[in-house]
Length: 111
Length: 111
DNA sequence: ATCTTATATCGCAAATATACGATTAAAGAA
DNA sequence: TTCTTTAATCGTATATTTGCGATATAAGAT
Image (tube, rainbow over all chains, first blue to last red; front, side, top):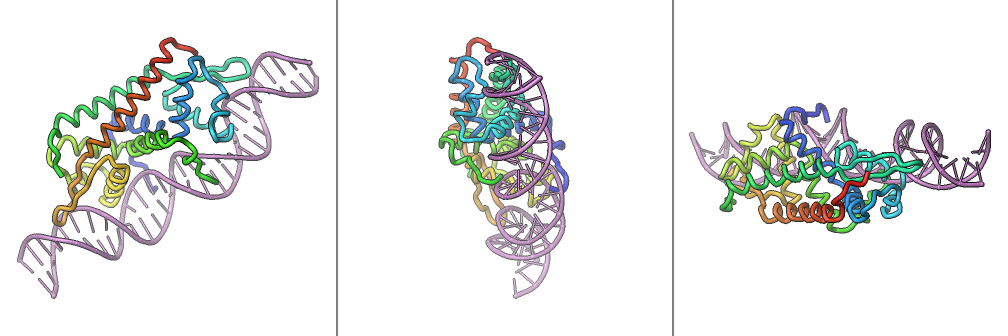
């Protein structure tokens, strides 16, 4: 693109969009599910479960971490990842708020 | 990328990811908000409200429509867009289900 | 110290997304 | 019919994402 215009929208709109972007790939949805099913923290087992190369999985984990959806700590020679509940619930609440707000104004169908 | 591997994930994971992708740009979040604030359906007023060219807005609207989040009908020389509540609530419920499922298994922090 | 093992990062190729101007299409107004 | 208005689509440039192999890093094992 010529110029990126994302900055011209409100911070809340950008935050919501960034959260959505972090979840916009099935591999990352899958990673979140894996992190949930195992009650303990998961490291490279994720690589075994996904149909992707180790480096690709690592990249997806990094994106989830950068977006704040998961946390990662080094545990000896391996890495332990967990869901960041605070951020997750915050964004979930924001989505729900958006949906609820929409619903009030649009009880009747229009077109 | 060499090959796209998205198809190798489950349909639900792909559906969720596609929904998230549709909301992964602040312009599209903004469009959804505009469609909510105006109780009647909106056509090109969106173009006036967003800091983007007409063709770009049209492209974003098309993406939201393709993802099933909005509907669009032709009204004379202009187009009327509305939120597709059914799809919207379905995906919202799926997100909530995912979040709830995660919560049950991870009451305690792990790392 | 050397050898694994686990994971992050680099470098690259290919696919997608973003954005715009120009053009097209479709319908009402003159 | 011709003009205007509205919106979709085409073509293009650039940015970002996705994916992998290769390499680097870091720590435990031998």
